[in-house]
Length: 366
Image 1 (cartoon, one colour):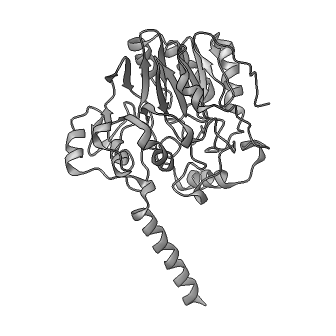
Image 2 (spheres, rainbow, N blue to C red; image 1 turned 135 degrees about the vertical axis):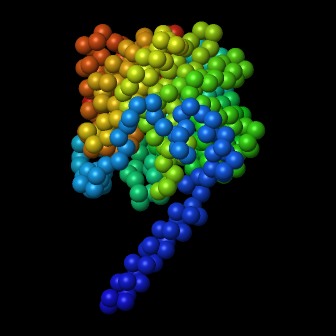
Image 3 (cartoon, helix red, strand yellow; image 1 turned 90 degrees about the vertical axis):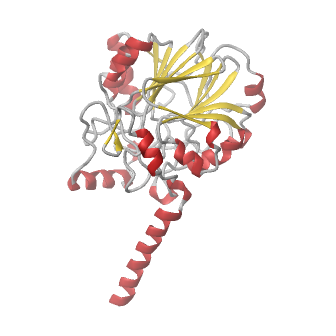
């Protein structure tokens, strides 16, 4: 019996090792030449990218155990009791849209942005589970997306904030890659895209405070306080960022994932004010306070970047922390009211037209 158990244990280990080394989900690996290039970045030291401030990333064994237990525990408050309905979007309507700037939320941090007759996707995680394998994560709260990925029309650009599974999804990229003109990422993230079959010429990597002009839009890569990595040994091999997206008329801020820090005020002072800011608000925990904001900090970050309106993101799609699933939006709404800051909370799939807001949803999660 002990031989059978031992053999089974070894088989499990072998399968795990093969999965780690052979699954395309984990993306690409940086070459020595690429690391030499990234070493020139002020945000790179001793072979790793780093945050501006000292950030605690490692949990003790006790906290790690609590985190894993909470993640896999069946708790009714951490997920909706029923499927979240979404508003549907038509492919032809996307193609024919020529009005002012609008955004459509796909849940979590994924957006479709239409601006100056360009169609841009932001952190297009359209998969069912934010993990390298379905057994390692929990399902999306909504059974449908506003539009199936296969039905999306030609995409002018994709902007990616960092390489975590809930922001950069292998399956989504496979479905998107042949209909996207250009991909814009922080330093290093392009190695995953190339591994997944995207030509190097269609990938632009930027460091913090660098910018690129895409036709008549400006994309600015700005700081965030977070980390990166898709495997067991590649933490901080690639950079993480927030983004500024600007046209002649509108100025938008996208926080990516970030703990609260002085970088928000720096961004606001340099590039603000912003007409609209999508700021992370969810998946927080006292065990990792430096890499995800609490909702009250989200509201303060909105003031720091000088946003006229903010939208809480990084919630409403997945369980990645142990808080009740509606707590982020309720807490940030209360704090924003106290700070006299306008908050928008659209349904998934509900168009947000920045110049003629006509949102019909109010506290739809209730």
